[in-house]
Image (cartoon, rainbow, N blue to C red; front, side, top):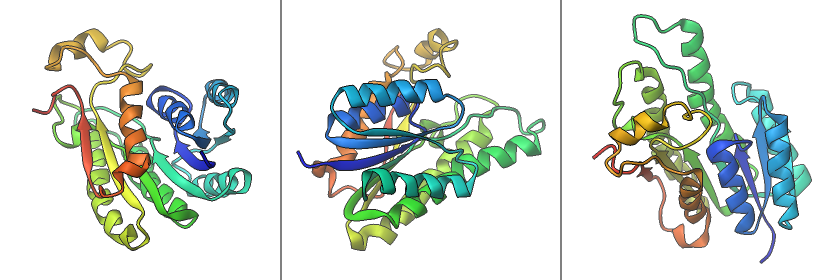
Length: 240
């Protein structure tokens, strides 16, 4: 298989790490960004290199526009023109509307909406025609489910809407743009909530990062070329 290049924003742990490893298995050389866990990023890079692909970890805060653009530039400089980009970086802030701080509001908007847009914008300019852009949203865009999640859900609904518009912008270049909306998934972020989450999912279990990565793999591959602007929910039936 000829070399392909993928950049995974937020690829050092959890779902993002599983995506980086899966895409490497699919034949991509991988760049991944991280903010606070260089150790985890290094472990993922080592795993990918041991499997025979190139990999690089780039420190880049998705709240920083300059860092986003620099991550794209460094990826292209070190690995080559982009074939796929996965925008997984995001943060979770919860709280009832009357108590939600302006500081938290600004931060979650900067990372979960502005950061996603800027990552797509920067990547599209360095991507081959026929490339793939995949965002990682959330099933909360459809169903918030619990009190305190209104702002987070709003950001994920914004991503789903953004994807539809960007898909039209990039369609002339045959670049597809799709959104994956996971439900409860077993990561370090949800480690203390797994037993409770199992009870509210119809399938009575939470998802595994590898299951999300498998869907991303399809969207990054040649067989998904006729799908664009879609939001695909993978949540064990939670939103039904």
